[in-house]
Image 1 (cartoon, helix red, strand yellow):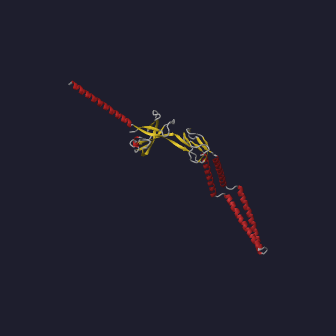
Image 2: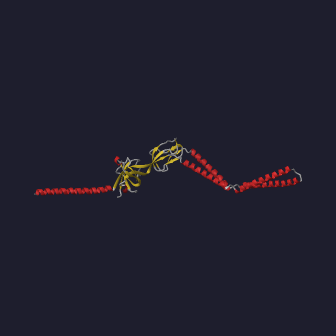
Image 3: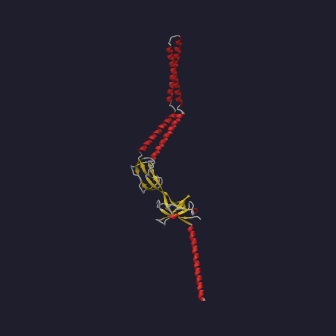
Length: 335
């Protein structure tokens, strides 16, 4: 009887222990699952922007100042073309501007006083000539009545008067034009010529400026595609520059977890090289458009899933991240 009681009590103890362990396991799973639900782990790649640098104008490369692997700062001169022809073009354009400006100034100022006085003197001279021919014609007319001169003499005098009258009118019109100056239409045309000359000068100066390649941002030279002496066309790649900032990480989040991520959310970025030294970052962009999971991100079974692209902006002050480097991103999700 005692033996049965002890045996029965032992079974109860074992059952109680099992129940306790089960309760602890359930609590552990609940806590652990809640913790996991607070975290979203994503896989992605570093996406550093690159710039293909070249000249906007054609020419022969005279100087190249940096090589592959060199670090450059914004505004540094990286390469220079032979500037001779561009300097000549600028000087010609400057001369055209000066010429057009002088012509406009002359038209706006009108004729000189000396030119106007010269036109007035010409009018007086023609007036005197006209008065003489007019008087001479009248004398010839009186003589013709008495048959003292021939009809031919009278006709010659009449012709001389008409010629003098025409010359007088011409001189008077010349004086009027000289006093009034140039027409408004001619002045506007001169202004247009000056504007065209200034535009050509600005274009020549732009071409001269574009004989230099300057770093648009700080970064590192990845490739040097040309050498001094090479003839290059506009747009041809001379350098490839990897920008230091900003550094982005491209990751993808599933449709189920999309509602738990927001722009500005903090992120920790881990690399395989230094998994104990994560980089801080934040979500800078969430794509509004769904796409199929990229093949280099997920397994074959998950490639048909719809995901949304995230851009993580990473703080990489030392330049340790490299283009295409695989990383793991941990997000503290919002519930």
